[in-house]
Length: 268
Image (cartoon, rainbow, N blue to C red; front, side):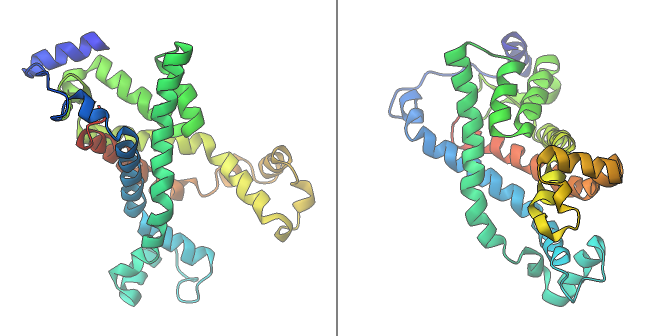
């Protein structure tokens, strides 16, 4: 991968990195407040991702709560009805409070992935797809997919898919539109794998509200019950299409914003 990156930089005619003095934007200065800059990058990425799908989240809440103004409508009908009744800002009602929650969540999630990757590589000596899988499993199932797509893309088509990082010409990063694509694919794959567990969790959380709650006391019993009575498409994957509509743009924006913030905050 390093050889491919070097070849891409040479083909692009990128100038060699010029050593900088410590204290004037050099290596020492860039290490200062590294964790804070990393925290901000992850938090901003999380907020941008959540804001992107805020209208869909608002619609989901309105429909789940059986709001009397919209309970007779579907998802897209509600998306059109809310601006007419509450103005376009109605689609973002409650988004400010959501940002307070999502900023530290996104920050910790992205920071954790980067930290786990470094820890696994330095302490265990494991690198490549395995260390991404391990770090992604601890931080979130989409980090592994995105990291793998990014690595494979830059290894096989560096000049087509990549460009030198704005904060470090020696580091190759994905072009923005490729980042969006990889983030969306990563989100879709992660959702497809984890969705049955999400359905199981939500069904268990409903508890005694459901008449068959005695048959759904454990995760395995619940999953077996849903599969046995409703099958795969109408049971374990019911509602997945709506989740794709929310998740794919959200993950695309999250990973793309984070990659841009890493450059802005000199994290490369």
